[in-house]
Amino acid sequence: MGRVKNIIKKLPFYLASALFLYEISLGIANYLIVQNSQKIRFISHLERLIEEKKKEASFNKNIRVEIDYPGKITTTALSRKKGVDSYEIVINKDWLNTKTLDHELYHIFDGHCESTSTFKQKNLLDKLVEKWKFYYYEEPKTIIHTLMNK
Ligand SMILES: [Zn+2]
Image (cartoon, rainbow, N blue to C red; front, side, top):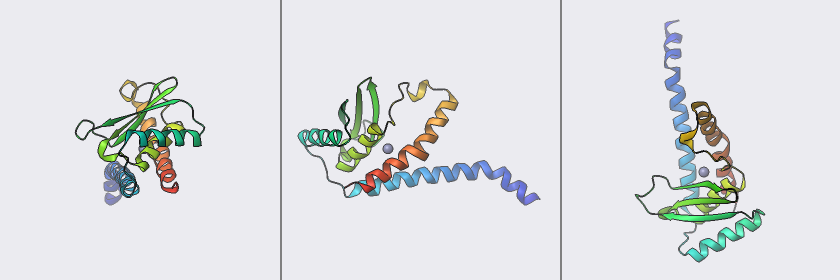
């Protein structure tokens, strides 16, 4: 019985570790997908790609991209809603490639960025639900989409 008790006591630790490893593997999957993707060097190329993808997805709302420089943001890329009809993608310059762009655009097209309140403004339960939804539905779905697309 002592052994079972011990395992139960350590259960939160095991669960937290499993979740952590899962989140790390999503990051690694993303990294591997993006590795061999084509670099975007010109704003004109970036704009053309966005227009093409918007057309493919029949998406007519405004999407602007901000390019961030290493050290300025802590993330590789993110997408968020800025207004009723506008969205923003922030991509770190080192990650400015077609797959990262596809990934962020898919988050927008598939409705993952619709929440208007920021993460900080949410209560604990909403934060947990959002984190859960992101890691167990939106992010894996987006990774699979990015992997399947040319
Ligand atoms: Zn993502």
